[in-house]
Image (cartoon, rainbow, N blue to C red; front, side, top):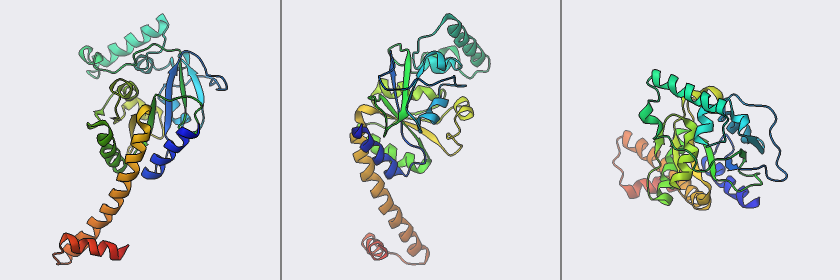
Length: 252
């Protein structure tokens, strides 16, 4: 869909992303023409990495190795998978990682589904619900400024579980930042130590893309301004703002 291709190009270029924006949607079936992924994955979040390169659908059962991911995405579960979730939550509680009172605070998609659709935003043949960006701190700066401008509020910074950032974006209708979790960082190679996740509700992509382009350009210009201003002040000068702007224009 060319519509989504243009929206994918904007954040990729504005932020100089190393990994393609990933589109995600849930469904009760596999859309015509989409391939159903073969095999299983060690965790649902590991599909994100593959989705930066190819379009595919994955069934609820194919997410079965990750009880928490099945829970946050409200995927249809078997009694055995429900038992796995219970076991995982007991272990988390024993470690004081996720206590009983914490479970109710974890965002969950509102409707039970049988499949999750994945793919690079530029190539997906479906309408995404959420777009995931793998970003570094300097990119988070621009994203936070842009999404606050569009949403009217600062994107919340979330911890475990990383997959909860998807329902958070859906339920709130606004952007959300995930600092990841130990599980996601074990399963997703592109989620490196210098990388976090930013989730955008797809319904606002056009507004985000426009504001991102504006703020990325402004941050580049202002970054150069401040570097030059520092150089002159450290050299013993006392430039006015107008003089620093003049230095910037001369350097450009």
